[in-house]
Image (cartoon, rainbow, N blue to C red; front, side, top):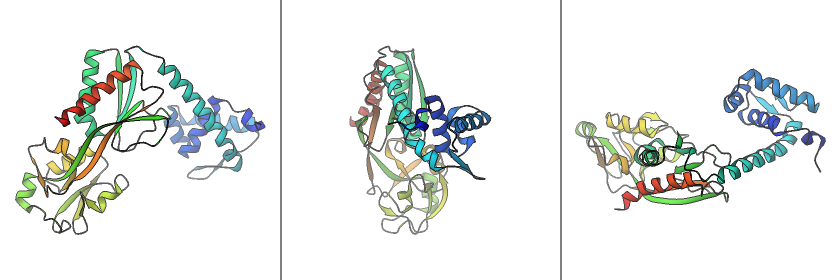
Length: 298
């Protein structure tokens, strides 16, 4: 049986409520909803007035859910799932080779595989438009943050279809200038006497323990970034040693692979929501991306 509170909630109000609950601030919610901050504040105030209940405790830093807000969270999320299901179902009926596809991936996978695939699809099907989002964070396909993702972690959600694209490897690389000036690191020395360029710790925490299985305890971390592209540029500039994907690093003439016996193996996965997987435009892009990865097997 619905509570009086949840029965007064509609999806338009629920999305504002959820945005504030997840962002914790009016500004963060406004960014997510692509509206101004004042609009979010008015909508939340109006919702609280209509429900005659305070949904958020306003602190100097954050909006925190009250018990009433916590009670509303479940019904609001159920509305969100229903709205997204309608959106996916309608999109899944579209068999035209036109429309927009949102693709989420990393900048490294985008440069080597996804962008060439997009170029081929655009040439063959100019009615298909692409929004490509590159980030080390994993997009939530269930919430339609993307329609398709190319990433190195297999999802466990039953709503998602995952296709293994190719086995990949990472190795340890340095610029020719760095090796000439500092020499190559020796296996088992834990990078003693060497400079390291790394992902920021929250992005890839395991990298701070080892690079391709070689402990980093004696190396000096001199550069950090959240971007694979910037990690490449730092290594090319001779700033230090880096763990890099071989599919790109081996194509850089100014990079040298050191300790080649040290290897990190992983898989590339193509992930899509089941409701959208078989649409014509998605299948066109999926086939093109799979073809780009298939080159590695030859």
